[in-house]
Image 1 (cartoon, rainbow, N blue to C red):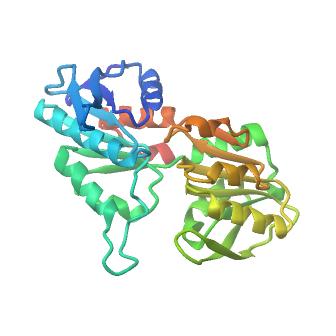
Image 2: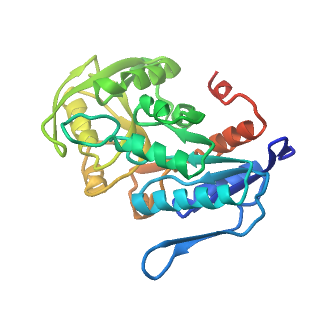
Length: 320
């Protein structure tokens, strides 16, 4: 398939956020990863040099804003500026994971809306378009004044569970860990033709949550908990404990972004969770050594979306 369109040649670059994912995407696209120097000076300032001619070309930068969050954000912004100044025709920021997404509203006095600030910075730095996956909050799409394509990892998870776990629909319940995730959980339940349940929880503070009860029938059922982010895994293991107490059998979790910070892995190891299935939007690093964690690749999905954007074809039709 030709990578030359009226927007120019398809070029893909990457910061240091997730080089492995970027290379995998390029393999799926059948194009080489663009040459770029992205490192730091001795004082910690980030240095970027694009080693290829991008004038008049259709350029994509793959850079999740995961840990180290601020370094990865600065790499992204500086790369955007470098490419804009090098006269790229169109620059798409591919953000498999959108950091600061949980700071999407003013829930207390005198706090920022950092997700909106980041959107402003990305736009000002030179992005003409954004491609991202499973945003924490849908309204973040409206924070951008440039086109944004929002992908979902649901089909990747459904395919894995149907092929490898093979849970019977009559014995399966899809569970949302909170009321806010019901819409996502309902989409999973529809694809599995399974029942739906909700964990009703009350947050004590920003670090601890108190699980109240389970809305729905989970006794004697296999369970798949679905969510977009697992950070410290506190809410996850509390939900697992509540489900187990309510009589659930095997409990799985399908969570897109494996932030897995602080005590997350230890909590997962000592929980009744049978398997945590995540994607490779964020590199697992040493967290990948946990036998309960299974990582799936979203490279084929992102590669298909990149090609569709490049060829001016519909991205939403991927989910029809």
